Image: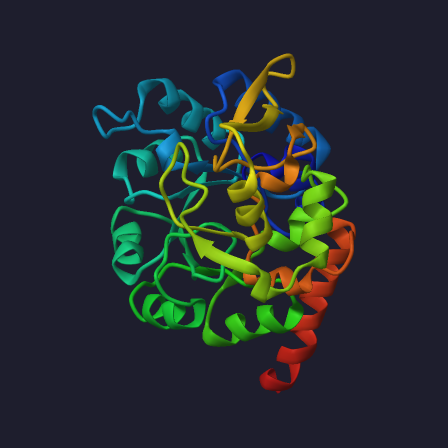
Length: 313
């Protein structure tokens, strides 16, 4: 979820009894330290830090940039879980996180990647199906992927992709997943940093209104699921720059948002908002209104429990 998953949103998720994840990719060391220290004051719940591998790796060497090694270590000393996505499981990162006292989560899109994550010492694995919003690692749907991954690893597996209702949550838990990861539903939470226009579009959309594409690949060529309307708006836009955004660690600096750039659309985004990347999973059907995080968690967990209870008798 990137910058949409702010410390405020993650702390609210933690307060609700779930694992709140804050997006910290590309953030400088000072912001990582300040954000996670502040989160500890905001919540007594459990929270973690998420990093995209392309934001940690030096393009020239293919290894973790020394500048970001300290960032990962700082996160590991403050958060209970450090989560990585979109790269091959790296034993050096796993060791660095364990050295800081945190658990390592690796989000994967295949059985082979899951086995590699377990092999290098990851404590839990997030299996992401193609139903997911944002950047998509996998090539097959979630249920098929879970069937492969659950039979191949022993560490806990978290299901991700298309989960926005209690029914969807119950379905993947029934397959043997230990937990679920929810993104799109929380993007429209009251505590989210998502731009109001983005939230409006999520509420109005259905699963059929999303598309898995490589359209928003300026700066990072990777498949992603977005609202089709944002692709169409970007295609209609004339010019190279659709707007500007303010990064949370540099509040006095506006940076351009290029046409077809893959970036979180937050309240600190300005310009032709509809032409920016509106990440959305097929779970968007579950986004009907702006609710608090606590209400969303109760709805998801309660709905799943009601469906699973008869199976446990």
